[in-house]
Image 1: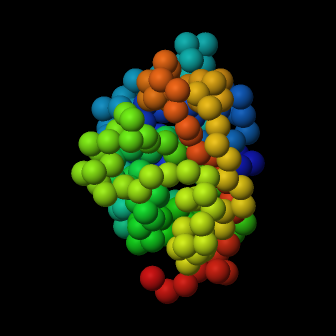
Image 2: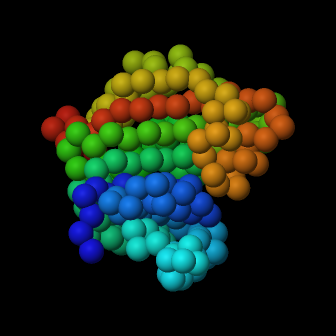
Length: 207
C-alpha cells in the first residue's frame, strides 16, 4: 500500500489518539512508538480486524523508546512528514523538558527535513510535586519554553520551536482521545503547553 504521508507519534501510549487520526486520514500512514507493549495491545489487536469491525491498514505500532529508536529501527530514519509527542510522562517528559539533547535528537532522526512537530506538555507542583522533586524538573510556563536557553538547546539538534501556547483542559479533552489525556485533563484544572515547530537538519550541531 502506498501512502501520501507518514506521521509518527512518540510515546503513543494506548494508541487511541493515532487510531482516531488514522480513521480521519486514510492516505496517511501513522506509526505509534512506545516502549510499553501492553499499553498498545488493545489497539494493535483492533487494527488487524476486518475493516467492518474497526480494522485499519494505515497504522503500525513499534515497541521502542525515543532513547533507543535510532539503534533499534534504522528503517524509520527520515521517513516522518510530521511528528507528535502528546503528554509524555516519566523519562520521556524529563528528556523533553530539561531537555536532554542526546535523546531529543532522535526526533530529528525520524523526521524529513522541514517536518513540523508538536509537543503537548504538562505537570504541576500542585499535582506532581513528588515527581518534580524526584526528576529535578523545573517549573514550566510559556516563558520557560520561550526562553533563549531552552530554544537554543533544541536548535542544537535541529528542533526549531516557532510557537508556544498555554491551552486548557477543554482543549485537551476536545482534541485528544487517549485515556491518559482524559485522566490528566478531567476534573482538575491545570495548564498544558502546546509547542509547535519544524525540523531543520541543516542546523544540527555535533552532540
